[in-house]
Length: 402
Image: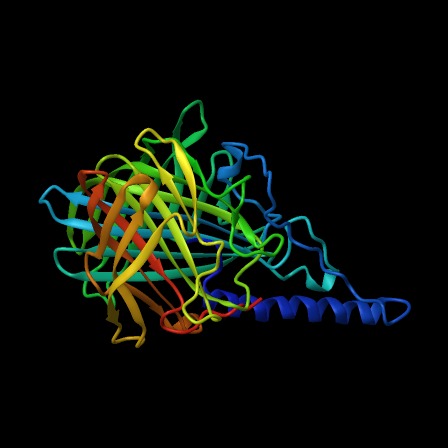
């Protein structure tokens, strides 16, 4: 579920926001008459019902919202039949709305930052490698481009290379490389082109994906649940052609976890019969093990029709656990999913267990996100499939930081 900033990023931006506030207040105290006058920082827009999406415009940056991301995951098969999973994510987070102005003293402060995560799962070799990148956005260093939309963070890039459906749906190219280093014995890279094969899906109700009961505790959230994928995977000096299917999430909003929410479980499931499922469970501190009633799911038929599912209309139960040697976190490691109204009974299993991302340099940021396989039934029909699962708040309690 892509509704919130990562924990380490939240810590950083809390500190940065305090710098912005302090500098602004100091400037005002030294110049204002009377001295007690303070600067009121402008507010970010929040995700509210009845948002009117406009495409292709909404594929790009929403600078009046605090947080935004473009999240790609996928399953690939090589010419030699080896299988891979990948994740490439670009985050944008802001300290101020794009149209905000501050005293001259603070003009050097960037108004936004960009963060990216890239991970590759080599299923056959039982190998998982990952890396992150981080930079600030300023007038002299733009990470985001428009018309067509793109993101560039060093040699990690999201590039719009074409479109279908009268320009509404973009065809994108993803490129990312992890160099050889102490944590990975050989470099890895992807160069992939993704083309939508099913209609776009807007999650939630009335244009918002609600994350808590409070007003604006939500996001605007849509997905391409099926993207035909082709390109190459490189490991060391070996490059192989791959094909497969990807999933894309784009989400933007300004609010984060409430104090009673400690993390979430998110899944993107692609079944061989053409149907898809997105779901997220928001876990609570009190009652211990409880789920926020705003947890929800979206059922997508093979032809693209959607149905919003509330908590109680689906159930996800853990069947096993895995403990990380790196973080000590204990994660669910297999799940049973039931959607009674659709006759769905599925078992979701990680393709390899060790798909945890640990970023010690980002103030303890740790989460599990990885490729999974799916077996089960839709009605009386046996079905297989693939999934990507994200698990947060298991290595350490997730806390509201801003």
